[in-house]
Every structure is written in structure tokens, then in C-alpha cells.
Amino acid sequence: DSNNNYSSGTVAVVVADLIADIKTYIATNYAGATIKEAHLESDGSYDVTIISANGVKLKLYFTAAGAFVSVKND
Image (tube, rainbow, N blue to C red; front, side, top):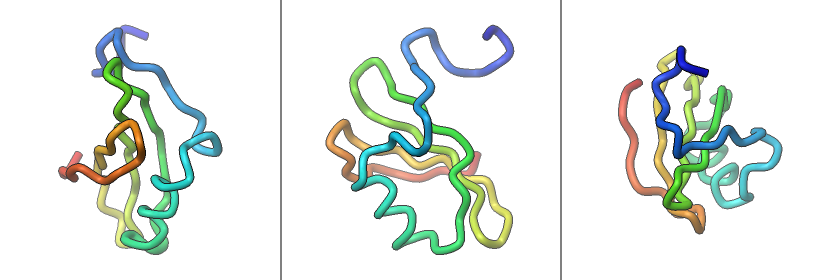
């Protein structure tokens, strides 16, 4: 899809298929947030876009093992 801002090295991930550590991190640290989309990067890491309980869109970055790396406003 040429209309998104992801490089060709990313693959969309079905939210239900995200590794448990990522889902647990989001549920614990962003209670009430909705996971909008997730992508597997070419290096094996993940970026996950969420909408927080107060409506703020955030992008969370995780290692291939599911460890939290960073967050930025999207």
C-alpha cells in the first residue's frame, strides 16, 4: 500500500497475534487503551499504534522479544 508511511520492510501483524508480553505491557501501562495496528519491522522489532483511554494516539516500540523500548506521540 503506497498510502501508508511504513517502509517495505514492515509486515502488518494481526493484533490478536501479538506476543503476550506486548499485550500485557499495554494492558498494564495503558489501561483502557485500544490497539489500532501493529507492524513487525525487518529487524524483528515491533511498532504498535494505540489510542489511549483519554484519546491520545501513541506509537509504542518493542524488541523482537516483546520488551518495551520507547513511545512517541503519533
